[in-house]
Length: 421
Image (cartoon, rainbow, N blue to C red):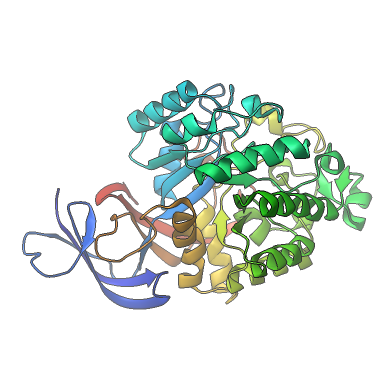
């Protein structure tokens, strides 16, 4: 494998918390010291930012079952163009990834279709129906890195506790969706005067706090490793802080859309802004940004959820939830950087280092011996987002026609360049 010497780079190191001009050497797919690199291919980064590749937890790839929405091939292209080097895929496929055989199919398809690292999650219960525990042990041996029923929240507390207790015995990570399903059913917006004015079915932010309270209590009872996929309200943040202060093995993520958009962006019933959970108030959004900056929120994800045109071109309350985010994640986060709400090392801590640590991966670092999963980007270049230029098969992005800053110039996975602007 060709040795690389990336010179004159603005190196963003989330582990050291540093942002400085320097040189990074790569040999045999790993980051190495700069000595003995006479045979290296030299790349002048021209002062642009060089950081660990993004590790994105919670990506929906619609194989098996809905390949017309997103395939591993198209998702891999989108990830590479967005600086994402590892995607952690959700099991909410058709059928659900709840058996070793389905998991093996997904792993083979991913390996054949893309150079991006693909780590599958598996369902916590069979069919994500919340009744019968999936074969967690066999699935873990087959390569599942975490277990989740995604937005199909298990309502049987006894059954949920059994799943977490068994996962705890195996050291498996369980990812929950903290929402009370009864309160959230049929909701398209967050309860507010705006939702009432628009006549949209809504849900109180308390539904998230109730769901998180339940999950924290069961995690404490069973000793399970637990991660909340999306915490999006200030009320839930207070509960999360209390659980962490108590020393529980609990972490939490949030989505790029909840950090950069609010409920008013729905505007004239624009269904590309319909996501799950629904967009929150501006006060909640600001609280989330502060929680990311302070480290209370551990992980930022794209929550990439492709939907076809037919499922989005419906009345807002009937339209499918979800937005694509693999390719727009980096540019969207630059909004917070340019508004001085967060610095680049702290941002990459949540987008690369922390998710790697939570999953027990050796990625997300720039230390010698770490995999050379890298992204080179210009944080300042402006452009107007055109959804039809996205690599994803589905084009349901809320950032269509938005003015953005920050573009990926190059992406490497294990020292191999997989994207060049």
